[in-house]
Each structure stands twice: as structure tokens, then as C-alpha cells.
Length: 329
Image (cartoon, rainbow, N blue to C red):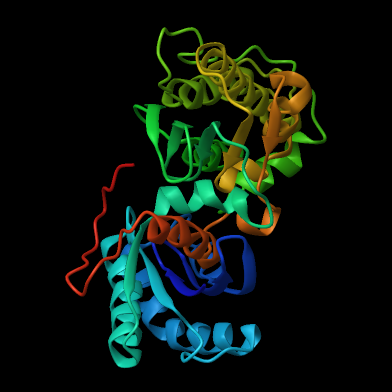
């Protein structure tokens, strides 16, 4: 089964061709990061315009690199949410146009399931599994008894992991996008500061990271106010350790209640080296799967992989498919 998929939920315009829910034939990604560096974050209206400018080029390149034509494609898939409405609509309208023009079935994909299934690229998940999704807009802990079965155990009540990484990056005077730069800076530091692990010991599976952001801000303020010498590298590493330890504790709590064969850690923040080290097989006691680095961020390949399993469940959409800024699992 060949699936042509579109992803445009935020600031990446991406089109991919995937085969049978595991193989990526092409995955074109046109990033807007350079555009938004001066803004310190994504500007929705500008992002929408950039998607319109780039999506036809990316679509043609994806087919070309996969060495297929639309006659070979079986389904057209597209992210329908959550995300920025204007950006989502660009991808949905492009997917609808292609599906109508070539008489192909249309499949709308939840962006969150896409991130989870990014770990299935070139890898067969051994269910039941526990999925930890940590991205710029989402932090979710999900139990999966089988393919395309999602039981949400908990989520963040405020800042997502990736979001708080970017906010702490600004505190440390690092440019956008800050997450990878915090990781790079932290590699030169030592976790000497005792920052809080918010909600790590709560009796549920929910998360909260805004307090950690505030504590990191206060730490830097106090050090400068008292003229205490410090290294940004140590603050970055201490912050990373607090996030990773909180995630580790929540995952271990879930593992004590749910018997699983594998833990999936996906989303943009799954690229962080401290999180990868903390959520290891040695630490958790079960197999742990991270997506390849190139599939951690937003991309259309993960949408095509997720669409395959949705199709297997018999779930096909029609041309009434709409965009949603809030789409739960």
C-alpha cells in the first residue's frame, strides 16, 4: 500500500510517500525555522503563507524522489489537527485537491498519532506498549494494547516539554529554536543546581513544567542579584536533568501498573540527549524505542505511517474533512 501524506500543522511543510506502514520512500521537509529566528517563535499568519508558497514544490519533489506517480498511490493522507488552523488548512486543501483530481481515498490523521508512529518507521512495535509523546505543543503518556489503540493516561496541565525548553532557552539568551541549543549547551555543564521536579510524585500521570521554568528563571535572577559566578552550561544541564528525571519517574510509575513489552518515546524533545540517556532500557527495564533523529520533529512520513494503521481499522474520511486546533487522542 502506497500512501502520499501531507503535514503542515506548524512550521514545517512536508510531503512523503510511505509503503505498508513501515517503509519511507521519500520525506520532503521544508522548514520555516530561519524565517522565525528573528521573531523568537512561530507567527501563525506568516507560517500559513509560507506553507502556501512551498507545498506544491514539496509535493512534486516527494513523488519524484520516491520514483512514483499519482497512478501508483493508493491513499492520500493529511494532518487534520491539532495545530495552527491556517497552516493545517493549507495541507488539507492541498490533500483534498490531489485526492479529488486523481480519485484517491482521503485519510485525516491526528498529528499526535503521527508522532507516536514515527517510532514504527523501519521498526515493528512489540505490543502492548507505552508511548511518551514529548513535543513543542504536547506531553502525553499513552497506553497502547495493540495497533491504533490509544488510552491516554496523562498529559500536561500547562507547558509542554518542548515549549518549556524553548522558554528556558530564551532565559539563557539562546536563539530560537532553543531546545537543541539547550541540549548542546548542557553537554558542557554539570547538574549542580537542585531544581524542582514538578508533579513527579503526584498520584496520577499528569505533568506540569511551568513551575520548573519559573524556578530556573528565579535561579538565574538570584545568582546575578547576588553577584555569584555561574555557568550557563550548568544551569542548562540542571534544567535538563530535572525534566528527564520527571519523565523517567512518570514512565516508571506507569510501568508498575501496566505490563508492556516496549516503551516508545517520540516527538521533537525525544531528540534530547539527556532524555534519551535517562529513558534507556537499563533505566526502565524494558525495550525502549526512539525514532531516528530525522523523524523526531514534524514530518509527513510519520503521518503516512499512522494513516496505514488507521486504514487497516477501516477508518476512511471524505471531502468534508476539516481542520482542528484541538484534536485529542
